[in-house]
Image 1 (cartoon, rainbow, N blue to C red):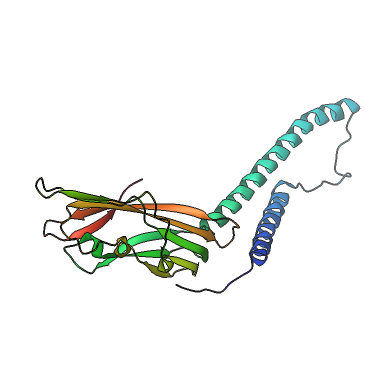
Image 2 (cartoon, helix red, strand yellow):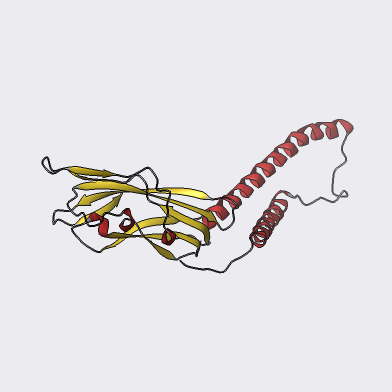
Length: 228
């Protein structure tokens, strides 16, 4: 279990608000500088007749409305891009990957690792390994082992209060399945379900990582991620 520095949620929200406020202030200053027009001296203006002024006003109003519309569209687009950029920069990113195999001839001897690849900590992490299915396809001695969709007794070493940014934690699966001594499998699969709370959200998220056991030409077992 990896421990990082705890920051309060209110402090992170305040930092985000300051960041967005500074960005929007800079953007609106840019808009004002672009669309503002330098006033001309009244002494240099030629005399205008009432008819000319009315015609000029009728042409200026649609132009002003168009400018206001463009300003609103650009402002809203900039705000959305700022928020999207912030989310993409700080959105949680986790992965589950197979590590070393303790015994090359048994698919259940592989160790797996959960990695926090994001830039913020994640909290209240629990990892379960459902959808277990292992089989031996031999016509004479064939058998299969099938587990429930999700195990409810999650082992303690598959949980963490905090997984800091850039850190990893080893997972107790598949050794916790309880039959690692069996080694004459011909195939199988199971799934990881990772539940956690991102550093800046009050609720938890869930991500699913399915894997399939594949035997290579030299007889070794490897676990490949299954496309979802």
